[in-house]
Length: 249
Length: 222
Image 1 (cartoon, chains in turn orange, yellow):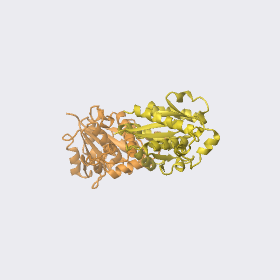
Image 2 (cartoon, each protein chain N blue to C red):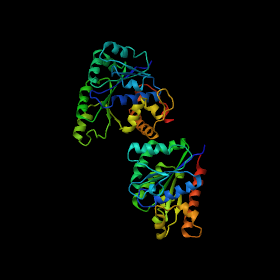
Image 3 (tube, chains in turn purple, cyan):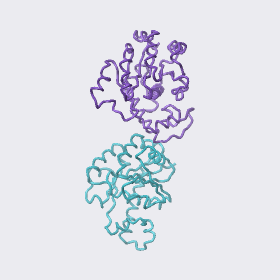
Image 4 (cartoon, rainbow over the protein chains, first blue to last red):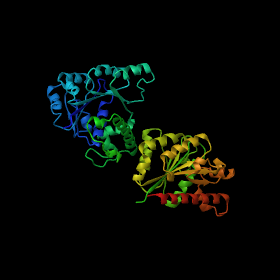
C-alpha cells in the first residue's frame, strides 16, 4: 500500500497567496488523476472550500478532535492530503505535528510530508523561513516565491537574497508567477477551480460564459505553475503515475 | 458552418499604409458581403474610425478590460468578417497577448480564420518583428503587404518568402485625394463613369487582389 502523503501549504504572514497555491495543487493532482482530499483551516468560513467544495473539509487545527479527523484517517482516504493552513497558524501547526509524533513518523519514512511555505515579498515573510526550517527534518521543504505583484524578492540585493534563499540547505525554491489581476478576480467571482474556469465550466460542470481572454491568461499562468510542479517531480513525490493531463490533451 | 475571417492589419512602424489597407479591405468586404465589423486600435496615427465611423469601433489593448472587449468579439464565429487596424504602438502588446491566450489555437477550434497582414518596411524594427510573427503564426495565415509607396523597391528577402500582396503606389495628388475623410473607394467606383482613370484602375486592381486573397484563405481553411 502506498505511503500517505501530507502536503501543508502555509505561511504565518497573511495575504501571500496560500489558498491560491493550494488551489493550483488540487487542480494539478486532479489533472494527474491523483486522489486527493483537502482541509481548509480557515474555520469557520473556508476559502478553499468555496472552490473545491467536493473534496474539502473545514477544520479547526487547534482542536484535538479535528487533528484526529485529519491525521487518524491518513491511511483510510485518498493518498494525498492537502492542508491549507491559515495565516498565523503555520508555526503552531508544525509544533502540534511535532508534539503528536507526526514529524517523527515522517522522519522514519512512514509518511511523506511536504511543506509549501508561501513567501510574500516582505522581510516579515522571509523571516519566517528560519523558524519553519527547524521543523523540516524528514520533510520536503519548498520555499514558494509567490509573485502577487511585480516584486523581485530582493534579487537586486544579493546579500539579502542569499541570506534567505541559500541558507536552508535542503529547501527547494519554487516560483509562482503573477496572474493577471482581472483574470484572478474573475475566477474569484466564479468560485470554480482554475481548471473549470479554463474549460469554461461552472460549478456543476454546466457551460459557462467566461471571457476568452481571461481564460487564456489563466490557462497560460496555470501551465507555468504546473511546469514548476513538474520540475520538482511532484507526482513522483505523491507516488502518482505520469499521465497525459486533461488540460494538455 | 463556414468560418469567419478576421483580418489583422499590422506593422511596428507608423505611416506605412495600415489604415489605407484597412479602408480598402473594409469597403471591399462591405461591398461583397454587405457587412463588416472594423476595430480601430490607433491612438497616434490617422484613424480608421474617422474614415468609416458607421462600421468602426475603437479598441484598446493596453489594459485587460480593453483586451477582453476586443478579443471576445473577434473569437465569435458569427459570419461577419472583422478588420483590425492595429496601430504601431500596440503591435508588441497585441501579439504578446494573442500568444499568451492562445488566440490562434482557439480560433481554429471555433472556426475563425485569422489572416495577419503585415505591412512591410525596410527598417530594422520591421526586420526584427517579422520573425517574431513567423514563430507564432502559421505561414499560410501570415501575409506580407508590399506597399509600393513605402517599400519603393525590393522587399526584404525574409518577408518575401510567404504570400505577398502588392499595393501599387498612387501618384501624390491622387493619394491626397483618397486621404480625404469623405472619400469612399466603392462610391468612387460606382459614381465615376470613366473606368479608365488611374484611380479607378487602382481601386479595381486592389479589390481584385483582395478577392484573390480571400479565395486563397478560403481554400486553405479546414
